Image (cartoon, rainbow, N blue to C red; front, side, top):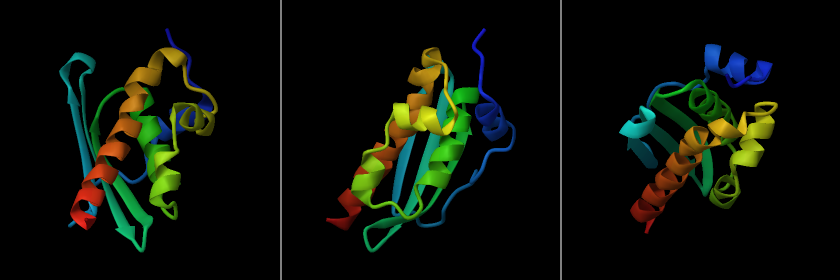
Length: 124
């Protein structure tokens, strides 16, 4: 059995920013039936900075915790700063995440990249 840090359990038990954004700047959606994952990440962007991030999720403890910290980490970041976020950084915010859970938790980063791609396609 994987052991989660207190920070991961705290984020999982009381996740931040669950919901949606009306008229988001970008949306990233992922469905993976093999991992029993369905998530949508919404971002708002103003003047090149992410101003808000919310998500809807059906997934594992690691993914929910990762999305929770990601949604708190994104506001104020530029697009380039957001694109630089990766699993080692997110794991650090969670005081360590079992490496066996990085694949599932990595869907949060993938959804972020999709939301940014969506934003950039709308902005161009």
